[in-house]
Length: 566
Image 1 (spheres, rainbow, N blue to C red):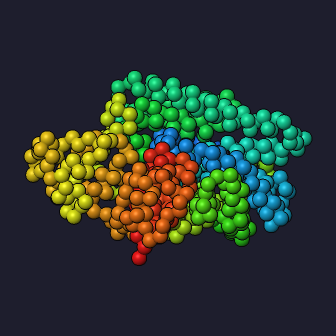
Image 2: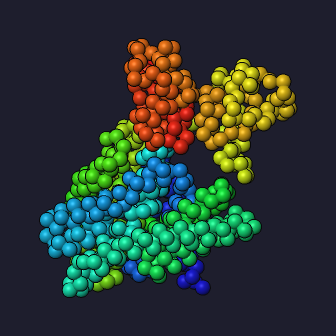
Image 3: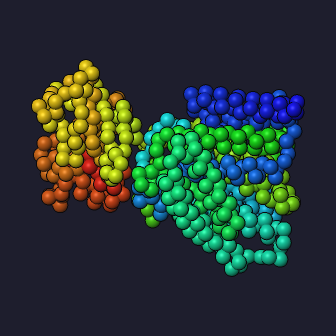
């Protein structure tokens, strides 16, 4: 009992300290994952705790379970609409991008360290993929809202790129253990099997899991536990069949989170707690594996590899992978910088250790330094870089309450409190209501107003609407005063995408419009420039005006911000 109590005291104490410091780290822009890793290192044999822990097999098992929970949570939060924008570029990054990163880093490491080329390429494969836990955690905690094109590409890439990294790692481990195997069709078949079975079993078993859960009446906590246990079954079953369990559980979460209106907010909050427990426990354990005194032997080489990966290999891989797609140079540069490394490379670095490949402790130590540098340099600077490269958009003031209406498609019940000085103040209800918006209720001084009288809206009114999600920004703009960031980014005036271009130019323009634009609406003008891939923040200059997409629905700009020339 005494040893059990000591174990509980130490384990929960480390978790408590890590979580406490993690809540404070956001104020300084430091990723919480880095905090957990450092706390684990501080508790290790070279740190204050003096805990000796070198059980790589246990760390491998725990890390796989934790990654499965994190990927499931990420899939549950990913909306299918993001795949319209991000799937193709993310798939290119997850395959071609990982292969290019691995090849470039492998060649550099072989030249720098003087190891066998297969060992160098193995290092490239281990650190070639971005990490879902790091991307989800850092992007969420950075305090910025990325434009949808960039955000969806990063999130989907991090969920899809594990099979390629695992394939490269296992292939090279097999070649190093048994040099007679060589490269050939069996390796290619393995890659197709990893991707193919991962996709098929993830979608199929995810649909089955979601159907079962939809028929089970349970509270939020139990529902989240059922999701986790069912997701773990999908993960294990796919791995046993020879597919990628990581890809399968991400897709299973995607299916479960998007079927019949998706997973409720309360369930997602429960899942968020489980994801935090998984990633904090995993990074604490991985931190205990680190022996800082041994890292010094390869520190210079590891720093050079990390810099080469961040400044050369990843940017080249991103540029080549995104060539066929409509990304600006700013977006490509940001995606390149946000190639965060986390637990996945460390877990992959355990593979050759468990297989008994020579010199793999060196690879493990280099991988740890790369992860530390990535989280510290890239993770901590993400907010600043997003604003510098102008890929972030100011957040809109959210409704006080927003609830999806069952069996109504994309319609939500939204309640806003009208600010003093808002555009809606002093206007009749009917003047700001559109055909897609239905007013339901006005509460003033705790009394219900008669909507049939078309009341004048006053500051402090609680107004409830039934509207599509795409109208949320419009209602927020009418009921709330714009923040300084919103005014600076969008301007103070808004118009509907259905407004004709020539009418807009006649009212606001400084120059005559191009005759080729005659008869076009503003929405059609955005479609001409961006196809049906417009996202919030996309900008067009027209007759001295700066038009910026404010609200986008299925790739169509339906609300536009106007910045007038100074």
